[in-house]
Length: 328
Image (cartoon, one colour):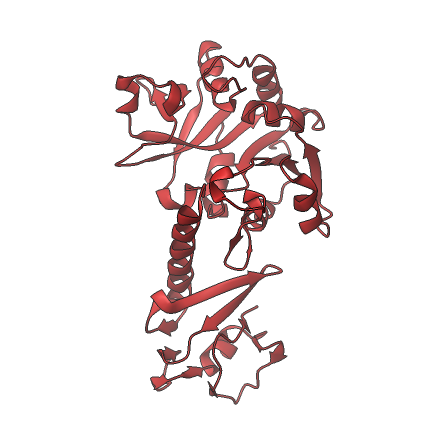
């Protein structure tokens, strides 16, 4: 039987490039803070413990999630790197546990992807992806069997290493006793003078237990947002992914580019823009500015419009723009 899973979410970064008074992890994506998306995905894995490492404007972060009583908060008063943050969180986790490290500014990861990572039988594993342009990412250096020799941050990589296209997403899985031993041996031997979590991979290889690599099927889901432009790109991708999910469920959307799903309290809401042609569900006419509801009420019995249940005999809804429609 597998040891219990604990998820550590690193959310202490300042996010200077956002140029905002808000902590980066509180920047909104589809109507909710980025960190809220990460927490929802973490909870889908049903962990025994959920730990959030906070730092910059930390009280603002804690206040935003004050109702989330399942979070164990870990304060990182000095920004000494990802390895230091994980070391602080491990202090309150008893061995043996399985540890998954996530990032509060990487909001699009799916639970299915992370499930594949945490089911690995290795003592250490990393979620990686392959990019045509790996600029800005740490490179995953592998041995002849495809296992990790080391992960090198781009700032510290030489020319040959920068040619590698397999990159580190930062998402890490490990057994807690081994991870604790490795992070205790970290030293700030890099240009940033920080304790890098990625340095544990070279230690594992030196110990004769090199890490496994789990590749993402969709690289975009592992992208983070460091500035407003990147955040907008994530929003566009999420909009397209949500539209695709609904269309596969039988909802026909004429223009997915002008379709939004916002999320509040873990509920999906559709925002329909007036003047777009919609045809939602089989047998409904394609009408301008009209939203067909019968098929949605059949598929989603708890459908509500503007907070009120929808009558099953109501086929269309007229005269609304950006109306919240809860699916479940």
